[in-house]
Length: 191
Ligand code: AMP
Image (tube, rainbow, N blue to C red; front, side):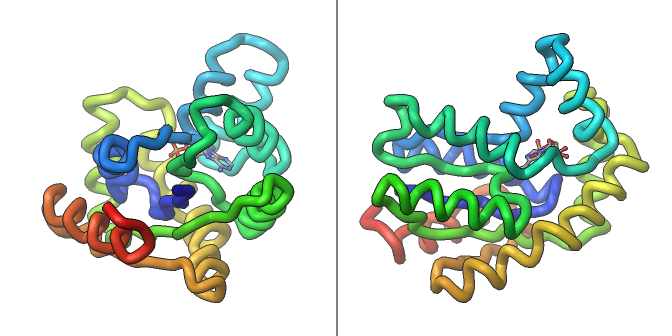
């Protein structure tokens, strides 16, 4: 199964993805984690990538697609993948659709986790004190939320028009959110 997880920063995608990959036994492909791994390498590319992450801006679409495609070619992804934080633009969604179509496969569903903005800011500021992520500061958080609204949120229409969109209320408890996600997934797959 190939599944896209859409949600603003702080919506709880990471937490729910961990539970979902266990349930579906597919790898978790977080482009945020992949890009942070590139950032740690101390190369010209890593400094370039860091300039986007640290400013809360999106890395270039084709670069992200290239990193994802490399990972999709690995053996662990033959039975599917859970895309976390990717695609984040309509262009990335089209690149992914094209890439999968070339392999004769398709995306099964897109799941959107919905959380109101005030709650997101509170959660991200709290995460900053626990994880120490450089981009979890007030200014960058506001930029990432703006980027989500303007560039990523339109993906819901893109996937709705393909009949693949499912939406879950992310304001509930972690357990209730996961129960709702399982229900959505079961509409597309026997789990
Ligand atoms: P995340 O861990 O998903 O919150 O991502 C952290 C940062 O990595 C984002 O603010 C972007 O700078 C970058 N990033 C992650 N995924 C993508 C993507 N699909 N396209 C462009 N930039 C991304």
